[in-house]
Image (cartoon, rainbow, N blue to C red; front, side, top):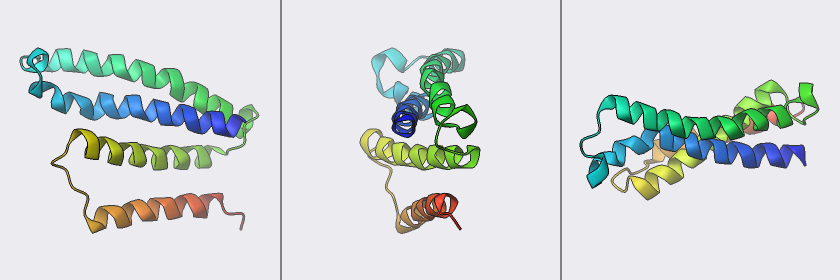
Length: 123
């Protein structure tokens, strides 16, 4: 159960972080965001990142073997990276409709999925 909680919390966490890192690139398309300065955008992104941390820290605590969870530190990081790229791909397709994924992007993502397999495999 802790493993599932970890993954769900990492998905939520990474969704907030993706919006914090890249969502502001769409602000200029809205009336309220056309004249925002960099400082305002930074504070808005920090506000989103706050919610990212509300889920990321508990996810890592619940998932880490040292705290009774099922994952090693390396496994946690690998899961997080795979989730980050998945969320980013969905975000890019939904919010940045001009962004297209090419074959090399998909191959690179596939290699990251392969990395998850390699890291979790008991050799």
